[in-house]
Image 1 (cartoon, rainbow, N blue to C red):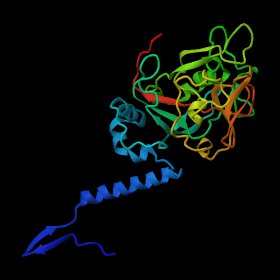
Image 2 (image 1 turned 60 degrees about the vertical axis):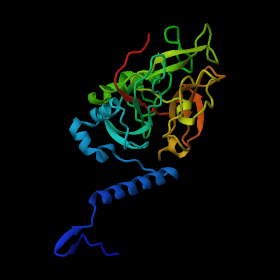
Image 3 (image 1 turned 45 degrees about the vertical axis):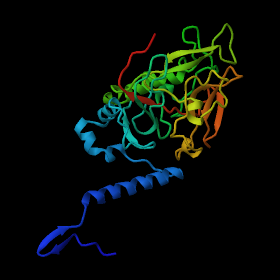
Image 4 (image 1 turned 120 degrees about the vertical axis):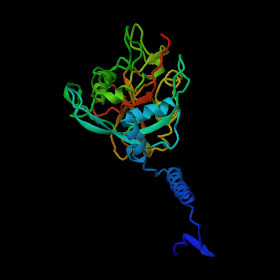
Amino acid sequence: MANAAEAFRIKGELYGVVDDTARETASAATVLEEFDRQKSIGQYPGRSLADAFAAEIAAKGDIYAWLHSRVQDADFSGLRIGDYMDVPVAAGSNVPAQTVRYLLAAVDPYYQCSDSPMPHHLAFVPAAPVLVSGSKATNTSYIMWNTTATNNGNATVKEPYLASHLHGWEISDYLPALPAALRNVLINHRSLCEQRYGSSALTEASGWGWADLGKVWSLSEMEVYGCAVWGSKGYSVGMDCHFPLFDSTASRIMGERVFWWLRSVVGGSASGVCYVGSGGNANYGSATNGWVRPRPCFLIAVSYTHLT
């Protein structure tokens, strides 16, 4: 089809007929409609935030400062679940150098929740499980949930996940390997956590309590599947909700068929821990399973003070 004339001449005067603003608006609407179509059939590939918002990011200095400012202003316009940023992870004693693609998994999933109201926030999840190295790695690049076959807490830390070998690696090894500019805009994930500790090994929860998961943490069954599957009845859910990133079984794999750990422990067992199977299925196994990888997540938000 030929392009329409840009102007008409009437009695020697030129009158423009092209509305560039309308054209740009229509083009943008077409792009968004295509994104919606892709999302509706589970085929939205995500956009690079660095590319899609390059001008805004440049004005703020870096992508982390830009995201922080967006959250501070509660301005989530233009952001879509599945959009991503590539985060360089530095080499450490138990972390190999790697670039981890982080996907936007949820917007304000816990806003105003917890024992003290959480601020606006964005939840990011790795597109694939990350690699482990050094003395904490098993089978070259995997990690045990615990170095002994127990899913119980201890006298000091009653929450099994917070007392785990996995979480120790996340906080002591992985978190320091993230860029300082990113660490500066993360908040502790405050959650209602299952407790499991008694005078002997327990196979069910002994209660729950509010606790900090730290600035990096593993997902729960509820956040991935939208329900408890193998976890303890009631206590394993706490305040957790389903993240919209995981809208299909395929979304749990993201193209990489690798087992990855969850923070939920198994009901009816003193040693079982939940993980996502290589086929995207809900699964579980011994805390000492050496063929499962971590998938540490984080929340970008403004800092806040919670009750103690």
